[in-house]
Image (cartoon, rainbow over all chains, first blue to last red; front, top):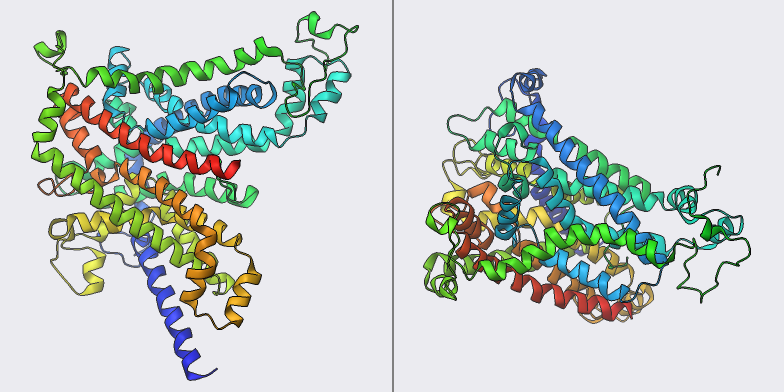
Length: 273
Length: 313
């Protein structure tokens, strides 16, 4: 290597190290502090303990809020996946007049009417429906927002599935619903799974919708309860916050790794690789 | 296959399954009626919780609706008063300006540039380095917003923050002395993943032979970028800018770090709407601002869909 090339190589790695440091340093606290006997805000190697996780059990809201997160995520996931899969199948296989226009209109709508931009009318609607402080209200609002993209994702999958399976099942005399259950669902399972995981991740991290629509801390999901842990007055309990943050983060990281390994990362919603 | 789940008319043995043109075929014999029944529940949910709020806010923005008091029981139509008071409200103008800076700084410049730099550098990096950096970018993206917000509060803390320890700048309260810059850097860190994924996919579409011949012709790295890579990824670039601008414009996360403060210095439009409408109960006024946000979203989304449509056809 000539000296010029050597300097260039060095510069290349210096830039990479700087970028990696910028990316990694904020996360290190989440890795170390939960296991530290006396966590401070400064990132440092921990004096090893698992005591912080024990404090979670003593807090009346911590574990319960994770349960609430599971409830909201599962409820929304079931609603979005089931309704979305039915709609996606019908739109993929049956020529309904104005189908493409409908799909694009839905996609357009869901990217425009975000939980943030429509915060006020959604709040008022839920208020008028008497669903404030109800987890059902949160599930319905989130499902309405996620369904269009879910239909789009699953229709993409179904469009690439050959029709010949359904045709042969039909030749053997299976009825449409039977074909759906025994032929279509098993074939498009990866699409449904992707959509289900995507929905869970979206709901799991969502802060604004439950923050606005729920009042009681015992109904609030982890996103909101964690926020109240570090914003309520007095000295924040860093042992509790760090352990709780880690526990709350693990499921999304696990789901990401699962999807990444199983299917790789693909772009949905029309942006093709 | 023991159960007959369909009405007998569909199983009429005397009738061959109708064969339509390929591509439009109803392969399972669902029929229009049942197909519609499959679509209607989704449309109903989307109609009530997505379409209706968007339309309703047009009306609400013309009223003096409040959560409590007389205006709650008997809201009056006040015409364009809400819009007039928004234009005259320095807090609103401040929020609009901060939102513009936030979107330009963290999405258009921050995420987009960092995303591209990461993709460009990683082409030459060893596999282990590449995997590590990409994992870190993805991690920042997938962690829940309440978690990353607290991570950044800890990082930037005045007394015990890791940043001050690293830079030997004890006592610097970043969130008070540089609040907007702090949330811009935060959001750059948070959202680079999407740009990285998209540019990475875009660069795969650049023919290696063209890059190779440019290199043989003695083009520098910068010339290769400008003359070979950029013309190929222009569509992706535009798509990316529109989408990340749309998302950043609707981002509520700054609220989790600074709650709009200090003294409104990070009060972007979403935070402004939250404060005026939900905290202060001025729902009519908040609806008017909501409608403005929806219109801005509409402009960005229509731009995006047009690109999408062009690419597909």
